[in-house]
Image 1 (cartoon, rainbow, N blue to C red):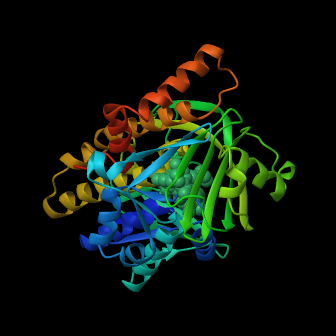
Image 2: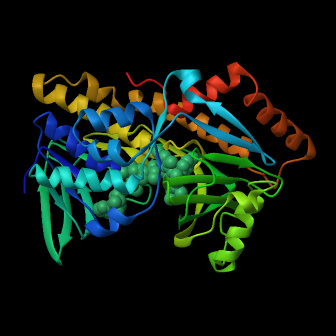
Length: 390
Ligand code: RFL
Ligand code: PHB
């Protein structure tokens, strides 16, 4: 098989890239290890930055998001149960879209297939070849049969555990990494959220996040150990802790419901530089990971592929390679700002077992400052709704 851009991975990065390329008249094929139903049911991110929601809408894949998604104009920060609001709309003029990543994935798959796009699901043994020249190839197996895609460029959109990044020879990439001494235990529940906006709650028991997918489905998280044993968290223990971390009155505020999903995620910050080697371009989690406290992962994935699609459009239109050559630098400038913000939100809101009493007091002062100072809350707000995309 031959195409212009071979894409590994049908997450938000790979699917959005294929969608944007098709709109620019550029042909692509996506290969995906999992089944369509698996990727459409994988519960992950929930917050879409303002510009990214606009991009989905403007490019024709935002109709369901605009119908079913929730526009939020702020968040609440809990300080041992005292809730203080950060008003994004007043501070930045913008809000955010709360709409599940798996819904974005569903919408993109439907749009790609309806437009005749090619996605090969349930493939195995993916490998990438010859990206140091101008005729790269993706090899894989489908139903045990070996196949090959010959292409002009390979997009490595295969997430943190994919094969594209490790296929780059040793010594070419520099890795920047930070592991946090905590993780999140998350549940999806058939019950209304405790507030109509997200609550990021700092307490002496650890951090809790009260998010949602709709007015009747909550997405709730508890700070836990990075290797927390989920078997030790039967539903009643999860509910008890979630109520306690809402602060006084939490037991009345939080309604219990059927737990639809439960899982533990460890947290890390990770970046590779550069994000491109020869004709292999990394995008999304394949190139960088952020801790989820800043709600930036999916948004960064969409930003990367927007920049890559523009560079490819320029190349195929005019033969110019300036944007392709600038891809990594352009992405990394945004990635590092999101890294800083995600690290900062994470450090401010979690209890770090290594912290001293001094650190704890400083953390409290920071939360108090950010929720009372116009300048500090504006800085949080402009990062949370998404820095301008140029
Ligand atoms: P994905 O979504 O991991 O997709 C990669 C795809 O590649 C496939 N794949 C392969 N295919 C073929 N051959 C191989 N060898 C392959 N290896 C892998 C995989 O099956 C998969 O389908 O990466 P992408 O597209 O870069 O998207 C990144 C986002 O998924 C991620 O950053 C976000 O989910 C992070 N994140 C959040 N981001 C936000 O913007 N806002 C949020 O509110 C938010 N909350 C979160 C999050 C991530 C979380 N977890 C579970 C890590 C909350 C959590 C709890
Ligand atoms: C979510 O709804 O899953 C969510 C929201 C905000 C975050 C992380 C996850 O910071």
